[in-house]
Image (cartoon, rainbow, N blue to C red; front, side, top):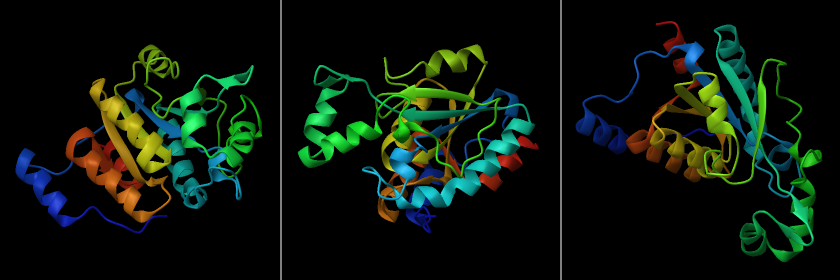
Length: 227
């Protein structure tokens, strides 16, 4: 896992502006969903085209938080990335054309096939029959047209969002930002997230704590359920 902390200057800035560091004193687990982002073979498998090596190190913490939340009546949602591809085009053509090198494109498409090997949840993760599985085709699962996440959360009366998975600074941060702007209480679970570098991971933690939500560890969050 990433061995970094939010810088003291950022902590001081946050406390100075709002008079406290953490936003929430307690959370109702029954109104809480844990969004586990992109913990699939595409990102977790050694040698995969979008491999994030540290993603494998956060599985234990993801399992721990998922189990705790399920036991307290909350919802765990596994969100994976995949794309259709037909007649030489996908539904996110700009991404594949400009952000993926030509020599990597076919292999990336293979891993992003709907229901394909690359979309399968990584083998070290404990998925319950009571969990939900959703698919997205943009970085943020809240982007209009990306997924049905917002409707699912509404039907389950969810008010609190926990975000974990990979990459911290791309899909996790994008989803957390949108969750806050849609008026959910949002928390980034720092030891359930993985990026390609400590600096990228830290940057997201510092962005989120300042403007978009709270940042806590698994143990800190589970303590909030007890209050």
